[in-house]
Length: 340
Ligand code: EPU
Image 1 (tube, rainbow, N blue to C red):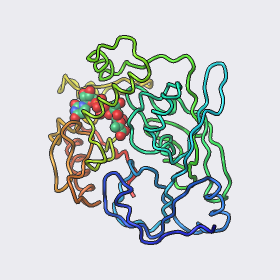
Image 2 (image 1 turned 90 degrees about the vertical axis):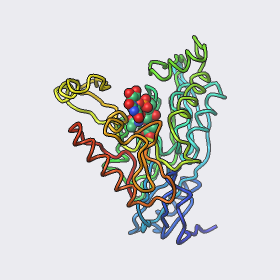
Image 3 (image 1 turned 180 degrees about the vertical axis):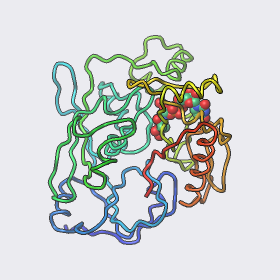
């Protein structure tokens, strides 16, 4: 059956911040083959495109003139193994959290620290999702993506993806060019729990668990996230609104002299990663609103929609927080989600 795009589709329920936006042209993609055909038939020629997954890392600040490709490609399977790893592939449209819990049910641990992160499997490598001491690139093997220029199905291995902190080639030079259709993960057969992160070890201790199983780590992380982070089904948000900034050790020492309780984490290159949530809290924005948006009371790094927010409201609060953090600490905060 021929594929038909819909016109004038509301995206309000397809972005977790709940911003009002209408797509001029919208199509639901259910397979890689379907996308290949659309490109080869010239359906996307000369068109700008916007790829939408779970809508949990995107701020739609106005109507979208581009063709929206809503990726709903399903599928998850164990595709093989070697002495050290099991290889698990999932369709880009699978919900990330459901996929993680499925791997645990299948006895294939390794992704449990990334439990309850909103969004889809296909979006996970784009911003190299991370939480509680792990980034998804550590479990990544390969992904398939359709080249919107040529219509060919391409493979990207670890090296090709240029992973970095909340970053990859798909946010940089390849942005807008490829649509990820499936991702294959490499899950270790010799599993050990990763519980160094203070919140995780504390939660396990509270639960009296000394030798945690994968499901215990996952359950503990659900509890931590539910305490600190708003549920996007109830309060519009896109998780962390800013990246944690990285500064020179000289800058850090100067700040530390004035703020002895400043948290900082030394990076491999000697620079120091700060906690943006701490900076925002100290700049007076935790639990404070500007119009219909505010910084969340339990985690100052998360911007929330108090109801009826527009793209302009998001921009206003974002600039105000950036300005105050820069004034207080001389640190520039960078927005983490994609601003459309
Ligand atoms: N902090 C405060 N006040 C706040 C929030 C945080 O003082 O309101 C300080 C505390 O000292 C705390 C430290 O910041 O110990 C770190 O806070 P938290 O453990 O909540 O983590 P985060 O650095 O704020 C990052 C990720 C989250 C991820 C958590 C847990 C980024 C941008 N964010 O937040 O990812 O869940 O670590 O690993 O790296 C996301 O990217 O959307 C996201 C939620």
